[in-house]
Length: 457
Image (cartoon, rainbow, N blue to C red; front, side, top):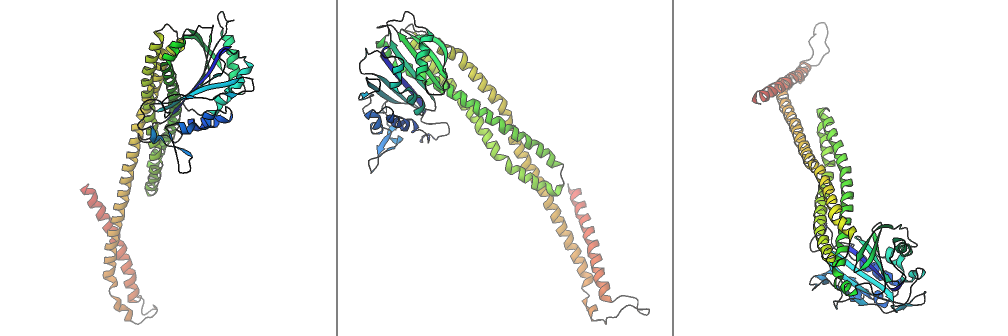
């Protein structure tokens, strides 16, 4: 294979739905940090000093570069380099006997960091075999770079032996790219891009593209001119697939909460049948357990709506890029089918998730309000009962005090009852009489208070 070029596109979220507008995601710098670590496999001097060339980093007092995204606030364009252009690599030797060169293009596309690393032999017409592909360190590119939106590897080359390249030939190169990893790339379809056959493979969150062309067949001028259109097509595709995966995970988590809250409804019905003395405490415990789950449930529902909007917006962006590239006569069947068939299915499925979960939002909000109202009523009843008892006790004590006020009986001489004096000591009569009178007065007062409240109600 001559004129071989290996490009890696990596897309990483700079900001997520949960981040305030003036902040970035805590993992935003992971892409640049992993690129710096890549220098131990591809020791380009420019990779080792990458941070010093990016607007996103600034030196501290000790000369060490720290991530500082505030430098991007006045970004004049998509470029993240200080000079607003690509970073050219100084050639390095390889164990395959040739010098390896390349370049790096860092961008910020709205809420996404994007980097394009392209590697190629110093001598363009040098023939590269499949075994020599390991000199490009494809495993380090695939596994070493952190990009939460996914990655795309694009291998291009020329071979005059090709009459009409077949997927089996592209599969050999793809297998070599994934050697040493746990990826099992699957062939998807054959397209045509920039006047060259394009074979597409998928492996987890990695897309692999192989362009096999005859000498001078590739339209390099149009490839350079339409670079940003193809890059944005890949970006929109990655955002859509990522959003749909997140939406499915979000729905699964919300369903777990839905099931938990359903059990709380049954617990509420069971509490209503409990003894009134313990009902208030059980309602209070149930009320404390629900609001946190309801909050998470509402957050998941909000995220589902955001993912729907993300897919809808990027579907339109994908369609715009696709239509532009197709005007030159290329055929991108897989992306066309994805735009016209898969994206609408994604949107329909997420809307189904939302429609299914939306009633639960009102149900659980009503449950919380019902528990609060019930607990308040039960507490009010307990307070009224306590108030009635206090009033009745007050009446009983006052009544008993009337009789017990005759403490002068204590001065009477004490003697045991006998045949001549069978009546107990006057103080004993007074004491027990006060107790009996207080109890009777308490019961009568309690009955009278309840009767008046009942008539009032």
